[in-house]
Amino acid sequence: MTARILDGKAVAETINRETAVGAATLMRERGVRPGLAVVLVGENPASRVYVNTKEKKAAELGFHSVKVELPKECTQDRLLAEIAKLNADPLVHGILVQSPPPPQIDERAVVLAIDPRKDVDCFHPFNVGKMLIGDRDGFFPCTPWGVVVLLQRSGIEVAGKHVVVIGRSNIVGKPLLALLVQKAAGADATVTVCHSRTPDLAEHCRRADVLIAAMGRPEFVKAEMVKPGATVVDVGINRVTDPAAKNGYRLVGDVAFAEVAAVAGAITPVPGGVGPMTIAMLMRNALDACRRLTE
Amino acid sequence: MTARILDGKAVAETINRETAVGAATLMRERGVRPGLAVVLVGENPASRVYVNTKEKKAAELGFHSVKVELPKECTQDRLLAEIAKLNADPLVHGILVQSPPPPQIDERAVVLAIDPRKDVDCFHPFNVGKMLIGDRDGFFPCTPWGVVVLLQRSGIEVAGKHVVVIGRSNIVGKPLLALLVQKAAGADATVTVCHSRTPDLAEHCRRADVLIAAMGRPEFVKAEMVKPGATVVDVGINRVTDPAAKNGYRLVGDVAFAEVAAVAGAITPVPGGVGPMTIAMLMRNALDACRRLTE
Image (cartoon, rainbow over all chains, first blue to last red):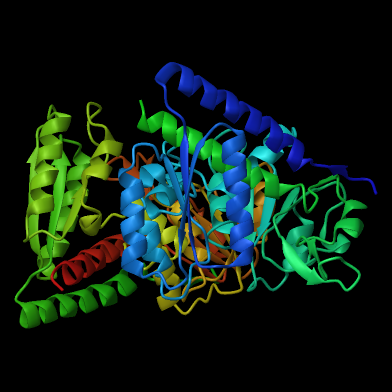
């Protein structure tokens, strides 16, 4: 293996320390504590794990944390009423509704119901639009922003480089495109977006100085798709069955780590790469929301 | 010259005929006429030409048309008050403020003041965000949407093709990117965006099946930057001084037309390419706005 490992866990810890300092400063100067509300509808076990992780991190950083648990048969109206309460709650500065909600819930209506000033996931079109036009007074979505910051803090300059993004989801691929193309620090890249309808995907990938895999297909990116020395960022988290593993499965990314690490110049691991960055940027967004709302 | 000329004027006329039919239908079925308000601040002669063109086209299509002319020393508050009146006016369904406004006007605040349901330029972040996430109940911005529709109506399929966009402006490059990457008709392309910070621009351009020039540099794209048989779309409109011309200048695009036409498979002319499409899509947006607001 030749590639340098980009340690998302360590960078996320640095950011979390900065966030804790920011929260302490707000408490000292304004007597306010950043408040993060997480809404969980139903019993999805994976969702519960995510929500607990967020709650724990919020507590660690000195945030006020609210968990709203609603039954799986919760109506749309009930959920919207809970969101309205959180919008009006002066102790809450960030609101997120854990995905996926049960089928009776219209996720789009839920996103539109959240006050854009508290939309720390950056799912509201108003904030998505601000991101694309380069306004920096909204929010950036946590995972793609985490990718940008991880590269920046690892000293990997993307300005003037060719970045190839595989995947065009609303939560990762499209916002990555929007962030990387800006004339701004940590951006200013030439960006190509590839996806399921790209016929010559491997050829596009081989041209990348920085290759970002975010399509949700386990170990899809192989060594022969990577230019020697390129930086490879793995956004995927996939469960693959593994009879030898304790739980019967193991987590792998969208990149075939071992073989790609032999070719790449730098690579993010799974876990310990982009994952911890996502939570760190969420907390950072909640801090920013609190700062703006109490100005 | 070998390239097929993509006749934007003819396609725009077809769309305008469809829009006129749509307007007549609305009048027959609901007794309403699409209303387009254009606000002009100051005396910029080029702006006046654009405004007059829009007003004339609106009249041709059977629209109600309002022109609000404000003096060049108009205050921000006065302009916002005029916009508020237009937002509240039930006879007005589309509002646009001609750019560039005089320096005392904060263009960003003006954009945010327009009711997103009447934002037929698609400059409001709420509509920009909807476009990026693939919601089709906002608006698409007129010039990039005009490019997409011109290709579609000319039978040039971009799905599965590699489209290279030169330029990352908020009014053309970034929205083009957002439109072309969607999983939707007229889109589904692999998209690369290049700009002033792209070191090997010519190499990227030569890989394009469809090359879209939108950086505002006269005749920048030369024959050697184009893959033989590629489609070339020229969004640029630049005045270059020409002592032989009647006005002392002539209009050229971002593409060196004659030499590129000898290599390309298809090309848009300037004028008569993207320009007429922009106005056609504006009128189409105003029709859609009227239809939705009177539902």
